[in-house]
Image (cartoon, rainbow, N blue to C red; front, side, top):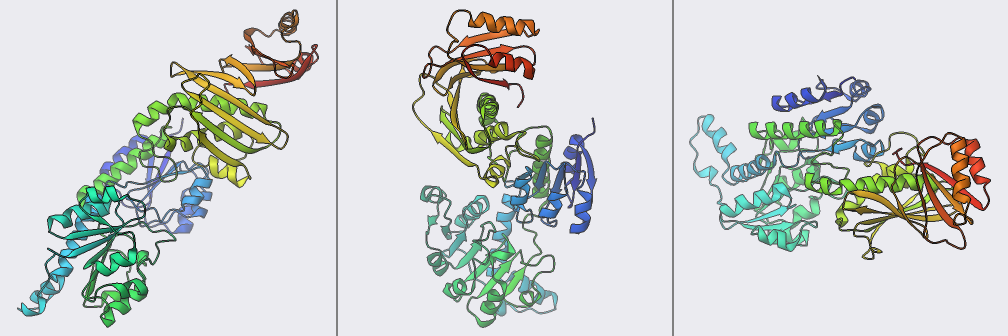
Length: 533
């Protein structure tokens, strides 16, 4: 069996490369343009990048075997996430590996700009001894405004508090309790944060909403002696507006590690005396580079081995403990999906997962993805997995829903699948016995105790409870050389029609199915292979 092929497109620490070599055949090809990358990915199973390589939709579209794209670092704006998701390619990043490096670099730039260290050093090296021109400012008793209070922002806050600074934070995705626990104050209005800050530091992700979040209007609200610091993403700042603000004295200074146009940077900004800059080295420490490389490589190895990664970007993030707890539910929801697929009369219009279990609400999207894969497998073309199942379903006009209820009908762990097609609607429910044994317990109004294994024949019959029917069915199957391994009759009928489930050991031909359908009272026959996921 051929080993997976892994393409590394940017420089990666040796510790990460060693892990990748154990997981597959590694090809290192740096400085590829888009055309070269499109050609290079045709047979690869994994792509590993840092910030230098753009993984675009055409690249992903030409990678027929691609399973995972790993970003050795936190930012994934150089990867087309929607395109990857549509193709069922999982995207992972390493959000924790360079956190401390980025936080420390932010503090380093803040100290450097406050004390004018680069300018003073350049003056001294030029043969001058000019102490008066390079008088700086202390950080103590100054106000630091953080736009974004995630991993890096919160670490910056810790260090700023140690300098005796007041820390304000603006982040719509964190709670007051989280910010206050870190010793900072949450400011809901960005304009207010900007107006109060002596130092304004950016730590948010780049999205359509945050691009140019620092624009001419916000710069005009800053204090005249305020300083802007950006170690996050260049496009968070409108560089033309910043150039004007630094030139006309709207703000005092800026310190940048990132630019909209990299690797060149903005030359006009770099020429300003009140701006200091570094070439996107916020995460460039030996420790951080080794950490993100190892983290990314381990996740690639996990995905290629059929496991879930630690830090998925376009799928639910689940801890090993959560995965272990969900494992029986994955088996249950898959069996329900397979049965649902076998019972559908036409294409589905709506698929709903109803959970009456102790499964956490944040884990339901993962189970829903697994359900959709089981229902839609073989119905839709192309790669289908839990990463892209929801988007594939929605592209086909299928409504997806997931609901939690308290009513369990006597079962401690119950999942129900409700499927609506153009022709009908049905419900099938399953439960876990002893937290691991899967049973189908309801099909529409019928109560069952069906072990979903092997080939199951479902027979709706108005005479299934009458003497002789089971014997007739057994004789018919026996004459065809088909062995019955299990048989069950639902305890009650629905509108005078009963339901019988028969598990058999051999395949059933169309002729045998027709003979079953011809037995007295039989109204419907469905044959479902429960072992085909």
